[in-house]
Each structure stands twice: as structure tokens, then as C-alpha cells.
Image 1 (tube, rainbow, N blue to C red):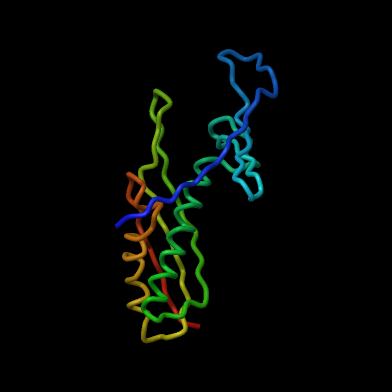
Image 2: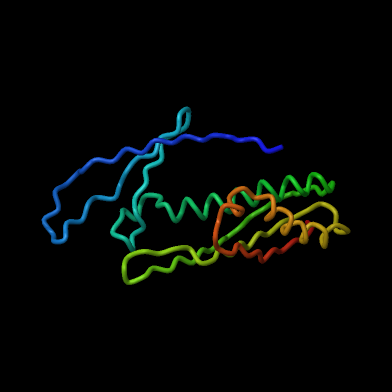
Length: 155
């Protein structure tokens, strides 16, 4: 039996400056609000004429993937009695754009570096990234490959 969970977010944007360039370029900065949480100030990526000091949708998609994968990984490690001491990831995403201004992510590479307490479980801990990927809500929602280049070691 599946369960449905609902999430809500609100977006607020308004024209802040009149552009005199042609074609007109709108300001891309906006605010995303989720009840009970700090607002996110968001813009387009710098390459798309956004404010480079703000988060952009591409940053947030990649951040969602690495966060969800880590939580799924910690879950499968706990099921397998693996104590994780630390977890870091320096992920990369590839976005391709087309001449008509459309585009899409074509791949994401995760580079998790995991430190565990038991040296006898390194092979198992490394292999669990595959199971974590199968459980990851965000990865399951993507139409591009999410690849893992995991490193696991002990203290």
C-alpha cells in the first residue's frame, strides 16, 4: 500500500526594475516560502542573467539529490548495522541547453566520501549506495542518470 504525502510552497515575484533593453529582460529574483521555515531567496543562474549571489533552481535540484541520497544511505547503513562516522559529497550536475532556450539535466555525479567505524564492512558500505539510490525519492523522480563514485574508509 502506498501513502501520499503533500508538500506546499509559495512563490512571490514582482517587477523590480524596468528594463530598457530589447528584448525586455525581467528580473529573475524571487522568494519561495514554505510555512514554518525560513524563506529562500532564489534567482536564475548567472549564465541565465540571474543574481549569482542567490540560490537558483539548478543549485536546489542538485542539493535535493545529494541530501536525499545521503538520508537514504544513512537509512540503509542503519539497517545493516553500519556505523557512519562522517559523510561528505561534492556532487556535479550537467545541464544542456538548446538553441531554442530549452534545456535539461543530462546527468548528475555524486562523489560521496564515507567514514565508517568497522573496517570489515567497507565493501558492504560501498555497495549500499546502489540500494540508497533505489530508495531516494528525488533520484526516483529524475529522468536522467544519477551516478555514484563512492569512497568508503575507516578512521
